Amino acid sequence: MAVVEVPAVEAYGARVPLLGLGTWDLRGRVCARIVEQALRLGYRHVDTAELYDNEQQVGEGLRASAVRRDETFVTTKIWPSHFAPRELERAAKSSLVRLRMSEVDLLLLHWPNPQIPLSETLGALCKVKRVGLARHIGVSNFTVAMVEEAISLSDEPLVCNQIEMHPFLDQSKVMAACRKHGMAIVAYSPIARGSVKQDRVLGEIGREHGKTAVQVSLRYLVQQGVVAIPRTSRVERLSENLAIFDFALTEPEMARIAALAHRDGRLVDYAYSGSPRWD
Ligand SMILES: NC(=O)c1ccc[n+]([C@@H]2O[C@H](COP(=O)([O-])OP(=O)(O)OC[C@H]3O[C@@H](n4cnc5c(N)ncnc54)[C@H](OP(=O)(O)O)[C@@H]3O)[C@@H](O)[C@H]2O)c1
Image (cartoon, rainbow, N blue to C red; front, side, top):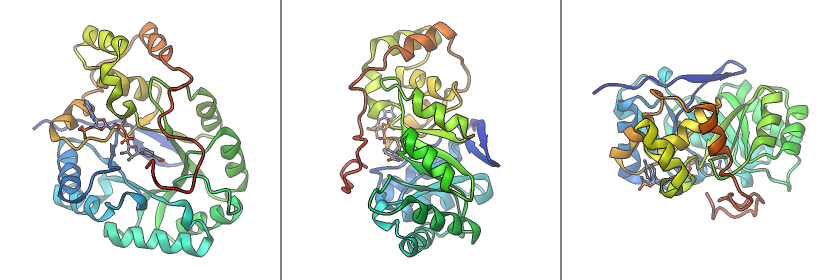
């Protein structure tokens, strides 16, 4: 089996593989098996969260793959109900116990939580990094204003903002804010939960390159230096989603894809509701 080499983006010393495996909604044996298979094919970056209730299986899959821990990049996220400083540290330790790891590569604040001062949460997140539970830290679902605030409050570099991003959504403003501060951008729902498959323009562009609409969608992101973390529960789709580093989209094709963004393109409600129903 040919192993695909995935390039990485760098942010404050973190080397984040441009393609990772999303694991939301993957549970039990399916989750462990998909993670193991993904690593065998060349995936090195796996995205989980305490909320996903699968950190244990993600850890099992990683170990079963026999890929060395220092060759993998594992992200997990703290849910906003654990943003009070002492709770945050406890939540980070619990994630590590479930993953059976001494540290994660990247630890994110999953969603903003307006109930708890960001300065306190970031103080705790920085401490978790300093004591060696996370190699790098970052945020997720932060708007432009929140990115600016977080940067001004954090004593440690915030290496990424993980946000919803795919061809149907224009995220240029928050991307610009992240880039200004040297943060990597990680795109979640990068194939719009599978719906890019039905798009006529993406299909047409794909045919020009002998690729699928899903591959065009992922290529569109990584070609901009944006990390994409598509999820699949099907082993056969792992290879399809990984085979995006052997072709390039032209500038007119990139512009055609950018024009697919529309006002109702967002899939995940941006306003944090305190409810885990989206993710
Ligand atoms: N930070 C956050 O707040 C946040 C929010 C949402 C997601 N995330 C992360 O981002 C990851 C990805 O986002 P997502 O899970 O929302 O959506 P996604 O990756 O855009 O789409 C996943 C869906 O696409 C289907 N799919 C995968 N590969 C395919 C292919 N080659 N052809 C056709 N369909 C395909 C999957 O079905 P099958 O399983 O049947 O293949 C699944 O239904 C999550 O798993 C999670 O790790 C983070």
